[in-house]
Image (cartoon, rainbow, N blue to C red; front, top):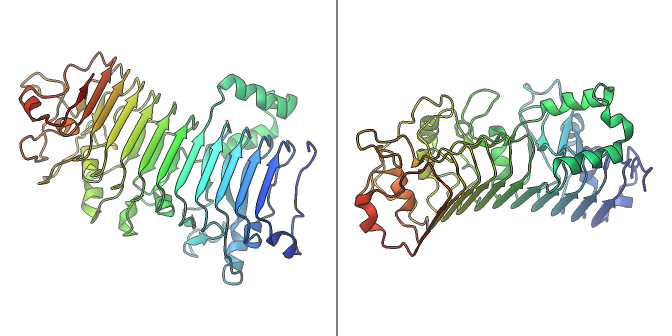
Length: 426
């Protein structure tokens, strides 16, 4: 249906006409610009599954009017049933959720929780080359209620040439005019979209997230921000909830602009504020083809990643070290690592480092006195060894290292006798 511009009337009066819908699938509607009327999810209480395929003009799935939400929040009861959202090959899609309005209430009316998605379990975005953000709130006080969400998968399999051809086919000659009003407005909107997947003020909205899988997610520079950009307050100072305590699997691939998985301007302060461990259920980390990232995490993250089992890093040309003592705010300022009297990474059994051209060491700054380049000395206390890089390998059953030419050594010579669990070394 190439000429279809909207499915519903702008204001649906007969709620019963749509309230019983359980599944919506929209495919090849290239002129469709508005999938739902504003805030219509409040009226679709039985909708369980939403699928959108090859809708080349669609820029967002849900366009939410915050003025309406504030007005109706106490008048409309909602029992959401939506469990799955899938969007495929829609090249102009920018966001899943976009908000408008509420300009006069951003600071005076307190936080606003958007309902209608309480049952949502899975979000899948595939081959949407223009995709930039899951949720773009018009102010930092706006949050989504996604208490059931466990899986987010964002994958872009199209290369640049395919994306250009697809957009030209669907946009016509106007696509090539960078100065056209529509392109100028689109660029301004894109500039306002965050380069952070999970900004600090939104992290608590994804409390039950278990799996995060991202491939070719263009424009992303940071995955997890541990500091709220609006007021400089660490997110844990205003909310005692842990950060993503249920996340188990993290996969990041082909993210050309990404510089950090975790970014925090003051790791020492964050550690002090944390009474319990955020990210403590994370078991698997996989990072591949991310050329700008220099290190994976701070040694202070070791306190949180107590259940980590597998770490795989592949073809990240900028990667210099796995664990770094550099503070994110000032790369020349080292993190002060406090003392812990327990083993770090006790379940980390599998390590794989592949084609890391600039990997110089597993952790931290080198020990100049011994001339080694593989370990860092800090205040972390282990039963027999005080080295972060050694702790990564200490309990490993499998270690695979390929084409890491600048890595001089991995395990201190005095520690080789302690590798009782090692079964595979390549």
